[in-house]
Image (cartoon, rainbow, N blue to C red):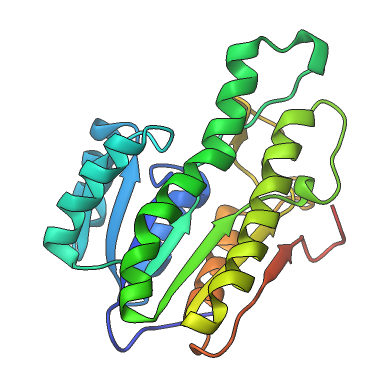
Length: 238
């Protein structure tokens, strides 16, 4: 699928420097968006900006730190104006027995995968309310619906993100604000610090597949809300 924007919307994307985030950044640029990228690593952001080039601004921030996000958002607005489309993609994965997980890891999984999206949505929502328009797209996971062994905290965080998005859609839909979820199955990327598949595994999605689903949600007409899109490989379900 290929989509394009006639009005060059301002898209704010988190977790932009690898995997799904990088593929999504490239997809939005091809579609004609003005892009603001947020990630923890300033060096990685600068390298990506140098490679991608046009219509692109970056700001380093940790999505779990609300004050860092507020500063980054102020700087990005100076260049690109208010946010039209927010893509909450930042995430961190883990495979572990729950009893073997250290408390700092549990906290990180919850804060990055759920609290980070809530933080940024809360910061962006007022400007969307003021203009009575805006789109939020939250990248969750099929594990938020169908958890597997060794993923208890990650699955819980993604389930929370799904419900958060649904509640925002119900609370603010009549005010012109859309909230949607893209829940991919297994993706050919690194998860929990390691690759979890082989390069020829056809049961895996590619990051570009998920990026295309995100772009599809963003490019639908303003009166259309894709409450949730579960993305699975053509060969079958997760």
